[in-house]
Image 1 (cartoon, rainbow, N blue to C red):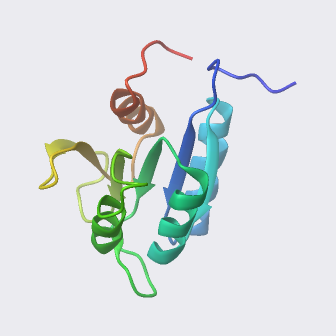
Image 2 (cartoon, helix red, strand yellow):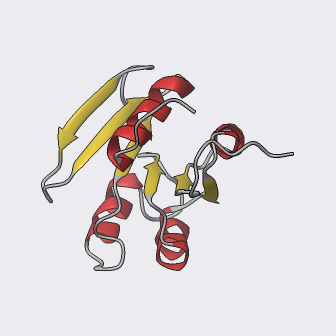
Length: 136
């Protein structure tokens, strides 16, 4: 039996080029009741965001094969269908375990979480940006 911690399943798009990171995040978030989609490159992330309409995106900054995370972010924010999706940058370019909450140029709130990250801290930021309360 699968235990769901939320009454309605929120959708998360995980964008990272490291398969182990994607698998870790997917398994953790599914256990917390989220529906999870994975992309390994910026172009794939944009396509999946348009197809699956995630409630939030976890986006690595350093991505191979064309678009990096910042370019992907700007493309997502430039499309009306994906403009309002909150984004958490999950990146090794910030100190491990750190969390920075900020406003980006396009006006929305986001977070930057440094790798290696703690799952509890990342979950806290997901819930904050989705406006969720309570402990699953």
